[in-house]
Image (cartoon, rainbow, N blue to C red):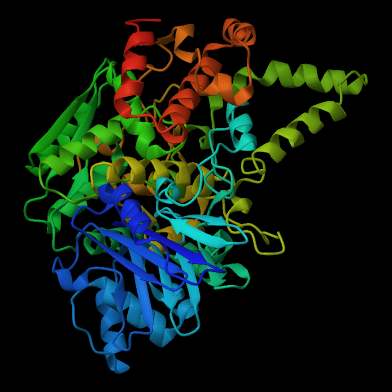
Length: 624
């Protein structure tokens, strides 16, 4: 994993400022501490900072050129199947000078073309290919949006980068008023389309952008979620025996794990104590002689440390643990928001991910396997599981409702209610209302027919997943650590998309979960896990994130005085006091994180300045 940045100046007659390119490289040094490179020509500048994982030699540093000097590539990510692709390209006459996936990707883009290469490669990536002859820039992002990529477009220039801060030397960073408004109304933040910054957008997952210097910008999609739906595969899976289906998914996941262990630098694994990370860790341990594993112990009565230690003992591995205590949820805000680059309210566990990532870095490990993606593919979220208890308790209410309809007393949804919902949707770009269909809109705005299977109906594989991936990327890379996701191997996801729902959620008389009695979530994942880990781990219920620190956070009004929020909304002291006196606790917490983001990312504050203000005015109390 690395950091990339580029600028195409449409009207320039000289190269972009090398001083500013070097400043941009400095801002991305955490994403690539092992080296940096700059290319500057008439109207074009490229920056790359490198985290070396494959071919650690300087010969694989970027920007990376082809032998003719016509094409140059900067690339963030990993291709897990580059060995097979390399052999194929050698058969077509390509010759290689390194053992890196970077050179393989460049050769494929040149020989096979962009579209064909994107169809064939397996991995996570955001890359920029520049053709110096035709003055054409091509950007692309992986299918599920694992690697970040932002763009800014104006009449004068087109910019792109792995981070928003990489653009700060070139354009002023200003808050996007619509996104801020949506956030304060309950939206957890964008992961597609417009960002929290005015004029800076996300390249969509599975997206391609072509920029002709001095010309138009063209956008397209090489991948959309409906592409995963394969009636022939679904029919084939339906004909298999139950055991054969479990075997098929197991072999696909095992192949993904083994491919993602490939590196010339140490690779470890996160161990949360849940079934997903436990399974990935156990699979990895079978083929990795000395797997290093790491756990963030959020201390309290619901700590998962015991489960993580049970797994480590079972696999005969040494578990390394970092303690996450109440004060970290305040102390950690400056460092978290500096790299998250948005208000981080939605994920309290962002603090834990950052702390455990720094533990990983301290032990010389550069990449870790994680269990992210399982819940989204195999229906592991609690709200996707039938709740018999709630259904029974709602029967009297349903009877009353039917009686009211019979006598004409049911109130229809008022137009004003619908209008309010639509207005809120306009503010956040309908990212939640449209759900998974917003993943990969075509240029004419049509998302096409959605998947016919159940795996993405609620947007779990689009919005929720991309929020989690943003958390993992930004906090992992704050410590120069790459996260890898075997459950998001496209072959695993394709199987999940075409599995009958009975392999994901299944009735079972043995399930005693009081919230979802008699239903087993992620059934097939747990069946596979039974083959690798103790039943006490393979059958553990999903506990989400075990802290209520945000609910116990107390914020003095003085924290906001003279701050970003007051200035942005033009509030007098009297109006600020009115807001704080009447705001609910959840709104005060959103205001806290908005204020921290504004101070840190827009006002050019330092983490120490924000930390001092937080220490003075914010604390987590012992109990509610």
